[in-house]
Every structure is written in structure tokens, then in C-alpha cells.
Image (cartoon, rainbow, N blue to C red; front, side):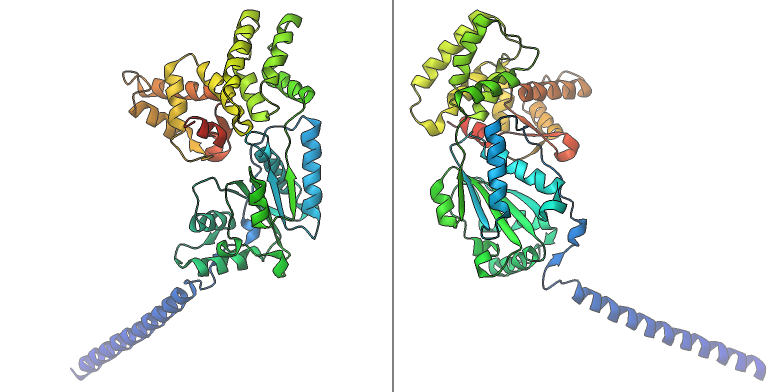
Length: 395
């Protein structure tokens, strides 16, 4: 009897000791959790190892024109100059500013060992804000600003992150002065030598107001280069007779040396060999450009013509629908096609797969006409509309 009582007391004692030990362990775990939680607040902002930040080349038209190649080399001289930390690429819409910036980005990505700078691309456009710019830069840097609402603190965290590595911020399509200090972009004049800035804009005044040390104006192509680019984009399948060539050359000249207009016009005339059709095109362009006196909007008649050549009204409506998205936004093709279906632009009576096949066919046609551009997002299954084409739909 006594032995049983002793055994029971021992069991109770062991149970109490186990509970006590378990309680102590739980207390310790809670303490560790609290410490981890405090560390997880990241008061200086969360910045992932930059070595893990993957920067990939962006889709860019090939530079086949010698002037464009020389422009690229000239811009790299500015970029490698230690006294230049901000470069402004300016010129009228459609002249090729973004294309040059894309090639700068891609060369830096592909040859980081030579240049030592990591590029980060940010599309600015007309409707922008300090907060959106900060978010776009932070996204490139894999920097988490989601828990910080104060603009100044966000700027401080961005500035610290940007000084941890040699990088080049590329701001595309800037329309007005950006308060760099409010965004969090370190100024080299203040002693930071790791971050450089390249911007594209239509306005020389914007370059001056932002404080660009180097201001590079992109000029339209000369007549010979414009024709070369036009021929290249007609494609090898389009063989022009001497008589048609005599009409096609003035058609190319109507593009005013603007690569965007040249590529778009040539895309709409691929596989057209009929001289009557070329004559009609030239007459139409002459009438359209006579009404257009503003050089800044010289490209609009070309875009209007290319749009009018879309045979199917559904294609035109699909093109206009794409303009509802923000400028230069990369749009998932399947998302667009679902929208086309819901808007009745694709026959709802078809099987689901047939609807998607038709949608992809329509987007391919718009790409071949150079009215939409293919992008690398979503494994290459996305498109975007050039900002000039976007504004054309409102023009």
C-alpha cells in the first residue's frame, strides 16, 4: 500500500516537473518569437542580397543604323565619365530615345563585368507621383517599403539602398521635373558616387531642371538612313519594282526621319507590291501631313494611316481597347483576350479554346502591323503599346 502511494507521488512529481520544464520551454520560445518579430520589423528597410536580384535584358529593336550606333557609343562615354552622374536623352516623340535607353540597359546587363553598373528600368510617364516612383524603384531593388507610409522615411531607405551598389537608374518618358531628393535618389554632388541616373524626355527644359550634366539630343534620321530602316522593316518577302520603289521612297520620307513612324508605316505595307496601292498610300499621307503643322506630332498621321489599314473593325476596337491601359504597361495576353471576349469583340458562341486562338491571332496581327510591341513579361506572353501610340488614340 505504502509502495503504491510512493509510486503515485513520484508519478505526480514527474508530471509536475515535465509541465514545469515544458512551461519554461514555451516561455523561452515565446521570447525567441518576440525577438524575431522585433528583428523582422526591419527599421532600416528590408533589402535582399543584391547578388540575388536578377536583372534581365529587355526587348529592344536592333540598332542597324550607323547614326543610332554612334549615339549609343556617345551616351556610354557620358556614362563612364566620373564627373557625369545624370544624363538626359531628349528629342521629339518617336525619334528613338527609349530605344537608345533600352540598349544602354541591356549592355549594362550583359557586360556588368566591364562596366560594373547594375541597371534598373523605371517607366515614369505623365501620371506619376513620388510614392509611385519610390515603389517602382524599390521593386527593382527588392526593397520592402510596404510598412512605411512616411515619404521622407521611404526616401531615406531608398537612398541607403542605392548607395550599397553601383547602379544606373533609367527613367523612361519623363514629362516634368522630378524632385530627386524627395524620391530618395542620392546626388553625386553630395558625395555619393555609386548611383547614376539616365532619363528620356521630350523636353530639354526637363533635363535642365532636373540637373543633368549631360544633355543629349536625338535627331531624326537623314533621308538615306530613313529609307534603309524602311526597307529593313518591309521584310525580305516584299520585293519592290523600280517603279514602286520610286513611290515608296517618298512614302518613307513622309515619316520625317522618326524611327517609330518608319517602322509602323513599313509594317503596314509588308507584302504590298501593287503600284496603285502605293500611289494611294502616298496621296493619303500627303493629305494627312498637310493638316499636321506641329513637328512634335508628326508621327500621328502615320499612326492614323496604319490604324486605318486594319481591315477588320474588331482589330481596330482591340487596338483601341489596349489604349485603356496605362502608358507603356506590359499587359498579359491572356488577360487581354479574356477582356476581348467579355466585351464581345470575340464571338461568344465559339468553344473556349477557339476564342483564345482567335484572340492570339488578333494580337499577332497588331504586332505584325507594329501597333503593339511584344514584351518579355509572363515568359514573353505580354504586349504593350508605345506611349506615342497610346496618346494617338486620344489625339
